[in-house]
Image (cartoon, rainbow, N blue to C red; front, top):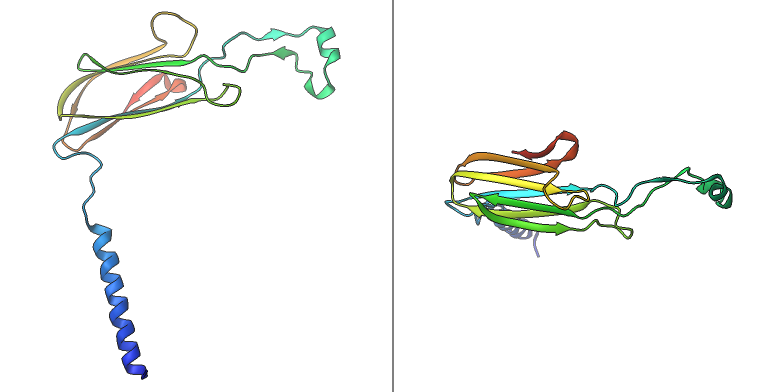
Length: 167
């Protein structure tokens, strides 16, 4: 095949491929929020309190352990389950019990849920329990929010910062 014809066909193929990539990089239009609505996302990863108290080992118990295992405190690894609830405009939307992850149930529990709501004013109430208490919650937050169409409202949780964060 002669060289000018080959280069011309290559140019046409390259231009066609570039047009294909350019079209699909902008089309079809993707929106993470359905048109005319807003979303509220509750997302966190949190390790609850340990499921028991640490106890001090006796000298006899320490002597029986190998030298590299002689920690003076014996602490349980298992953690309490996390209970989380969320109300939107007085209606319960989320009520979950989350177990700790990991083989020994000693890791953080993770949660992610997205709820689509109509735009406008909403009353949010979020609660979390991560201890042995039977009633009530360890962390609570309520707020009035006014959501715009297409807005993604995120609720995060950081115990070190006092609990729930609304963004």
